[in-house]
Amino acid sequence: MSILSWNVRGLGNPRALTFLRNLIRSTSPGMAFLCETRLTNSNSDRIRRLLRFNNCFPVNRHGTGGGLMLLWQNEWDVSIQSYSSGHIDATIISPDNLTWRLTCFYGNPHRELRKFSWDLLQRLSSLSNLPWLVVGDFNEIACDEEKRGGPPRSLTAMINFSHALANCSFRFEPFWLKEEDFRETLLSSWPSALLQDPLVDLSACLLSCSSTLNSWNTKKFGNTQNAIKQQQSVINQLHSMAATPDIMDQLNKAQTTLERILTREELFWKQRARTDWLIAGDRNNKFFHSQASRRRRKNEIIGILNDSGNWVTDGKNIEIAVCHFFSNLFSSSNPSPEDVDGAACGDPGS
Image 1 (tube, rainbow, N blue to C red):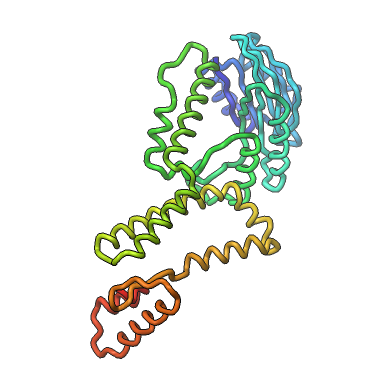
Image 2 (image 1 turned 30 degrees about the vertical axis):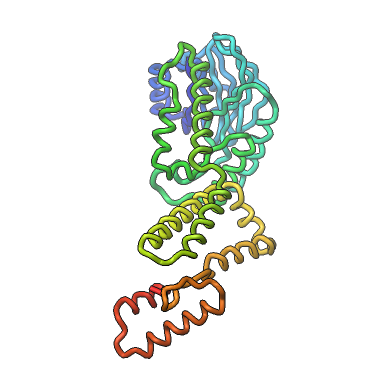
């Protein structure tokens, strides 16, 4: 028992129809959803017979484009709940007597109108408590990792799509893809021993996958804000110690860890808050002030090694150490390479 979803890009093309017939013959799906059929309803029954399905529900094309068709065999009980040029929504009783919901979806091909597709998807998500499967062609991606080659996608468009999916209770974190053990965790979460019922198998696999990834996410990343505070505490503690090679090595490692956590946090909020930046613009003064404050904190000198090798943190002593270092450097007729390197790197105490 299987379901096929395919953007056929026009069934008036004999080559496309031949390919589709061979695909259905090789996979034997119990149901099939076709989008961009570019057919009128009067031609749908002929296509149904050619593809050897017992039943079909067509949605007429608009002009020369669009067109949807849901086909199914007699073993499936299909009750159409609603439809439009961009969707077919149905309650399904499959041959194993499971009741669930199927939404066949086609995102508007015109980017400026795609917002209405996401509004429709979110409305559909709230109409039933049945197990829900959405198939089709959204005409959009949630992140660049979903595509290969071609020009970059619009960041605004991807964010809008991601928000729509999040509002439908879908959840995927793009920063997971940057973790070396993510692929292995994902593959191990998918049960290898399956039952005879594909729908039950799919439900069990998705449940296992969701549970495993949530546990992996909690164990690996924990509370991001706590992790940031912990690393900042470690860095501050190391700054208060004598600058031995071992301490400096620990400091570099702690700073690298903190940078990795901050990068992960940035990826996390891109899907949730970047829209605020794009939509609010310069009207959102509080938002931009917080961004400026963050940049100031990042560029702030919190401590420095003076000529005596001591770590000083108060503003006055930092100023004295910097002035003293550069005064000695530029009054010297033969500064050492180490001194010049230290000045270039902004490290007077090196």
